[in-house]
Image (cartoon, one colour):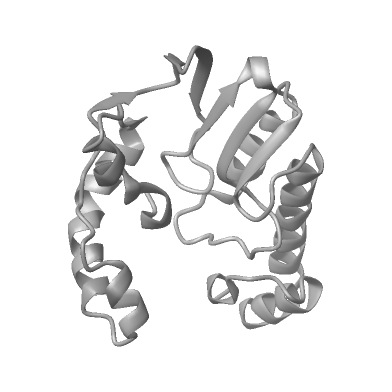
Length: 191
């Protein structure tokens, strides 16, 4: 439901795309998007305000629970709800014939992870479960696509975050992650 992954629904839906999401994702989109879009239009940073100038809060036309099989462009596609991981409505998109897995924000490479809506245990469980699935090209929600190293990297980040959180006072967790992953983008997510 995070706007960096869902605001395209209005654009693609208007062009005939079948917009689908998990029921949990759709519920959060309906509850949060109108207010978020309005707040970002009024942001003090004009670059942020400009990004949301024409944004429309549009939800999916169809929701699903568990798994949804589709046929798109002559290809069989499987969309799976990952459970409550990065967000309550996370889903992956798999195209078995191509070995392609679009991970969404279950995986990020070179970016700090936003834990604001996450279930840390569910996040790691979902990523480890995804690592058991077939596939050869994994597309993370943020960062470059690659092989299984994309998933291993995500698991490593979650393990490091858990270790930092369990071994330090809360005020020291952010600095520990910044030191462990220098040069990562989305530093604002660490706090």
